[in-house]
Image (cartoon, rainbow, N blue to C red):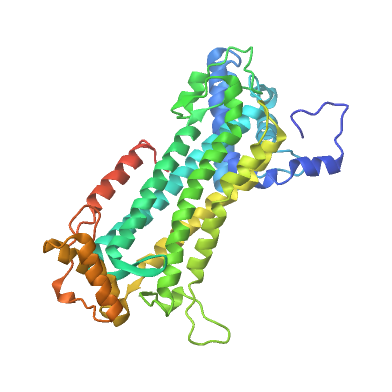
Length: 437
C-alpha cells in the first residue's frame, strides 16, 4: 500500500526497493511518534470541523490502541506497506472504516515525517542529557575524591607541571557542561512544530497549527510553511553537531586513559574483568573499551560533515535526499548512549596509583614551582628562570616535596571550582526545561 498510488499505476520492484532503502528499518523507531502526531492532528481536525467530534473521538481511541501495541512490541510494518505512516493509516482504516481515511486531511507525508523526527529526536536528546549528566556527576565526584592525588601534567607529551587527578577529572566534567550546552541548543530546535506545513506550502483547510503545537508539547511552531520543511535536515545536522561535541570529549578522555593505563605511564588500572588480554602475551591488560570509545567518538565527529554534504545545494522544498538523514543519524544516537554508559562503568572502577610525582623521572615537573618560589623572594622572573634552567642543565636541580604545592587561583590544584562547575551544569540543564524522559 502506498498513500500516493493511483489505481492504474504500478511501480517497478527494483525502483521500489531502491527508493525505500532502509526506511522501514528506521521507521519502527518513529512509530510511537507517528501515532502521537496523528492523535494531535485528528484531535485538531475534530475541533476545526474537518471531522465530526464523534469521528475524531473514534479515530483517537483507535490510535491509542495502536500506540499500546507499539509499546507492547506487537506492531510492525507489513510486507508491501511502504512506511510507518501508511501502516498506521492502514490499521486505522481496517478498524474504523472510512473514518480512518479522513486523518490525512490537511497533512502531507512531508510534515508527518518531519514532526515524527522532531518528536523522536527530542526524546533521544533527553536520554542523552540524562546519560551525560550521570557521567558528569561521577567525574565531579572523582574530582573531589582524588583532588590530592598528584600526577604530572604534559604539554607536547613532555612532562610539564604538576597536575592532579582532581584537576583531570574536573576538566572533563566541565567539558561535558559545554557539550550539553550545545545539546540544549539542538533540543530547542527539535522542540518546534512543523506539523500543518503540509508539503511545504501550507493548506487551504482551516487548520490550527497552534493547537497541535500545544497538544504535542512543543515550545512553539515553525511559523513559515516553507521554512518548516527546510528545518528538515537542518535539525538533524544541529543534533549531529551536539553528538560530535560529546563524542570529542569522550574520545579525548579515552585517549588519556589508554596512555595512563600503559606500562610507560602506569598511573591508573582497572579490575581484570574490565580489560582484555592477548592471545600470546600473558601480561597484557588491554584498554579495549577506551579504544572503542575513542574510535566511536571520533566517528561521531564525522556526522556533521556527512550531513552537510548530503544537504549541500538542496533548494527549498522536500527532496528524497533527506530520507538518508535517518540512516546517518539514528544509529549514532544509540552508539553515543552506549559510549557514555561504558565510560561511566570504567571510571566507576578506576584504580589510582599514589606517589607518582615522588619518582625521580618526574622531578622536573616542579621546575616552574622553583621559579615561582624565587620570584616570591623578590628575584625578577627572567633571572629566576635562568637560575633554575642552569640548575637543570648542570644536573643539580631538586625540589623538596614536603614544601607542598600552593595553588589558590580559581580552577587550580588547590581550588578546583567544583561547585561553580556544578552550578554551570545546572544552568545548562535548565535550558531543557522540566521535561523528563
